[in-house]
Length: 518
Image (cartoon, rainbow, N blue to C red; front, side, top):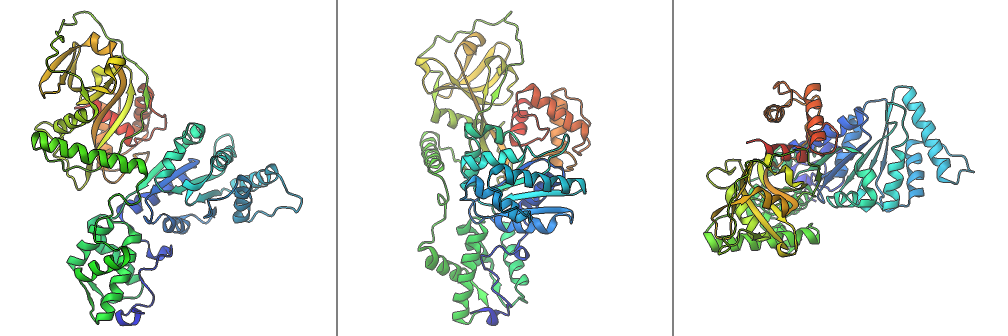
């Protein structure tokens, strides 16, 4: 309706997944790079996650344009299918002719295996992409895992890309899918657009649609769009489409903040932010708890929390690797119980944040680039001595139910904790080890753009990684390039501390290394 008025050849804000309209933000570019790396290096399984409307389907179609000519692809959009329907769809997408008598899974898998071997012999590759993978049943996911067994002695014959909403990570974390989850070698979480990206995104779409500047979004309108959409491309499209219609009706070429507010009211019935929408019930609960914690802390000490919603990582077992000498342990008095040295869960988090944002903490990390992430590991008690930054640890036994120690620092004699009154207390090593509950948590300044570091990458974060590894005694040159020596050092670090052995410095590997290096 408004296309001719603004000089567009087509609607610039359609919701169809047209690759021409994909705006290559830093996050979208990195997602493409991760997928190409996983496919070209034949890593087998690749998982890309992102919120509703983040552009995953468009990313799928764009990836097809980046694949080499000798790479065959199959794209599955319907994820509400059975395992047999999946096999039929895969063979159909690859163009594999099936004889009329084919009926069993074995018939279809044998035909697929023959096709993949032919492609491999010719020097080609094969990619299976499944969109909306969070809807796949466990039976279908298990069938997909079995497809990864189609391989030669050295190479995977098929590369499988699972794209889905964040719930996919919870599905894959199920104990029944552990074998599949452990085979995933490349992961990436697609972030929303930043405020700086919004104007570029809007102008990119209008240019692709044939615009020549007749439609102009003001600075105020861009601020309103970001305030409501939180960088979600689908919401941006909806808002911009309606705002263009409103401005067209008024005969105006400038799309103002008022037009954006009106479009939001017409579309969603409110101008409120979308915090909470698209969250799972557990995320909503966590968000509510954190809001309560912030309010309580403000009441107690006037502390102003400026961080972001915590993303609590799943616990991961780390086997003890240290032997400590008990000789010379000080007999530190911990009998003074006027003020308990145990604290509850909420208070322990408040103490962690106060230390994180304190004079010697990490408040210096730019909130535009980092957010405070609470990470958790299951760690053996003998291991406490290598933890260099503040942490909390759960305590065992019936008398310590839901109680924690908020640890400020460690040494060979024990730990210094912050008690319920905010005072420092010394805890003896033997008492600590005897009552150690296992789960250790700390706050890690996580980059907003989630990424993995792997072989061939050259970026400032690689140099930081190399320096940290060297600090812990791992032999690696500080070149800023993720070379073979860095890969071997990361793999050894992962082996030493019970992490997944993939040689990739992902968020959890970097978070543990961060905890061990001051």
